[in-house]
Image 1 (tube, rainbow, N blue to C red):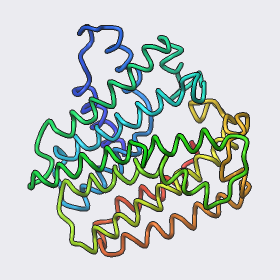
Image 2 (image 1 turned 180 degrees about the vertical axis):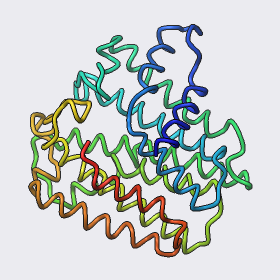
Image 3 (image 1 turned 45 degrees about the horizontal axis):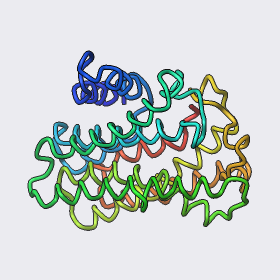
Image 4 (image 1 turned 30 degrees about the vertical axis):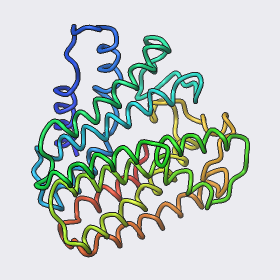
Amino acid sequence: MRDRQARIEAVLEAAMPPPGLAPERLHEAMRYAVLGGGKRVRPLLAYAAGEAAGASDERVDRVAAAVELVHVYSLVHDDLPCMDNDVLRRGKPTVHVQYDEETALLVGDALQSLAFECLTARDLADDPAVQVRMTGKLAQAAGSRGMAGGQAVDLASQGRTLTVAELEFMHIHKTGALISAAITLGAACGRLADAETRGVAHFAHFIGLAFQVVDDVLDATASTEILGKTAGKDAAGQKPTYVSVLGIERSRAYSRELLADALSGLEPLGARGGRLADLGRFIVDRNF
């Protein structure tokens, strides 16, 4: 993990506009948002899937960067006063607090554009048609049928009590879509048999849900210092979560059930799925 985290940090650094390039304030804020923070779970998953598919690190670099840039743009926008109105992210002031709301809005816009630039900057697959489909996959994962759509459902659900099925619909889109994209796009940089491709997609679906269940538990149980963001924000904002529906212990048990289902999808890969399996366990067992 440390090796891959250091690698993606270098890739992101190289992808970002250099300091001092006009417009300086926007580029400075972009670098502030992206560099030097976060666990980089999505890039880690992309690299692990690429490794399972025999892809070169150089190809997966661009996918890992693109997915992380979309993720960071979503965090910048989610923290805005018109959304979650948060003041802390990755242990430091949010972008709109450090700079201003207008700059934060533009940072998100620019990072989203930069993500797609990363996907088109070099060959990511042997077949150009595959690369086009990969770009479409990320666009769908980020849009109204993915992350943005899930956020819309989340905003509309505040103060309501949702069923587990309704929660899963929201989080398959809001959180799961981008995690799934990281895994499937990483794998697309290499080659898998059809059964292996289906298995990886199965893993991606269930580990994306497990990630959100654990996130909800951590929001309710961990401190702000550990999380690097404001703890207890979900309950304070009357957001429906797995914890509010199932309780803490049942949510923890459910995350383990989702992990077991996810790991079953890796069976066709055999030993090549080991890195993905390890990351799946890390996602569910993490305490920060």
